[in-house]
Length: 194
Image (cartoon, rainbow, N blue to C red; front, side, top):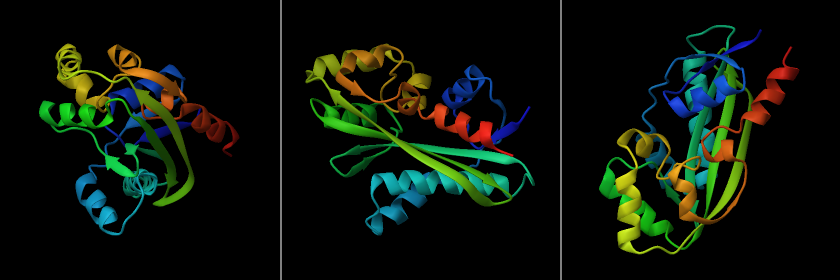
């Protein structure tokens, strides 16, 4: 059976691959995302383009080291009215992100890239639209108090398959995309791979 290398430390992405019986080995890319994002933002790149570039960069970097292997890179960002919102570094940043999203519709963009021998061979980007309920400051703080540090940093600011579902009025999109890996498209590509 085909095995891929996951160029990510994300336990969530690993869990999704395992759940869908995709053999995988984790080899983090250690790409400095902040430097790449900063550079792309200076060039006025859209959140979607930033997500695509980061997924490709991660996959290509790891695939240079693993000759003839398929390497999967992935990246997820939030697009709020054209503004890029990245994962929080601490709880105060998490609160500020929730405050920004409060009562608004935003897009969660997940990009994936498969590379071989340092070059992209396939990529896909999927979007989900999420509309957050209007919540008070206390409600937002209470939500954050229920979330462990690991979950908070692993799943952006909301854990859609858990407590985070309660934040939203409406969710339009694939749950795996929201968790960071549009796995059905990956499976389709791998099933047709020769």
